[in-house]
Amino acid sequence: MALEVTDATFDEVVLKSDKPVMVDFWAAWCGPCRMVGPIMEQLHSEYEGKAIIAKVDVDAHQQFAAKYGVRNIPTVLVFKNGEVVEKQVGVAPKSVYEQKINAHL
Image 1 (cartoon, helix red, strand yellow):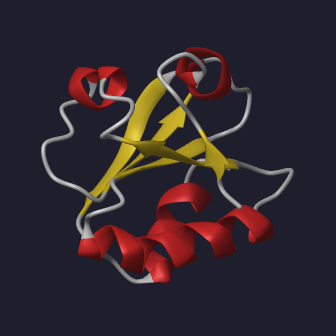
Image 2: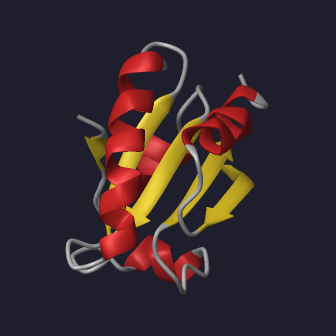
């Protein structure tokens, strides 16, 4: 399962990571988010050891969603060295997410 990140763990898990981190900002009530979820689960398995695939529930943890201007969900951000290097708003095919993470490996 993709790593659940909270406001309390975001800094340590995402911003201080030495690997690229793909973060899916989602909510349980969001239909399109349920389409992205299984893709994130697959990527979590496929990129284990190379990148971190994480999820932030924006209903429970709003601090970093607000900080990074997440207005629509799902929004997927890729972080490298603590900076946002890629962004995908809305549902996209798995290949789009792979391309975004591969660009930073």
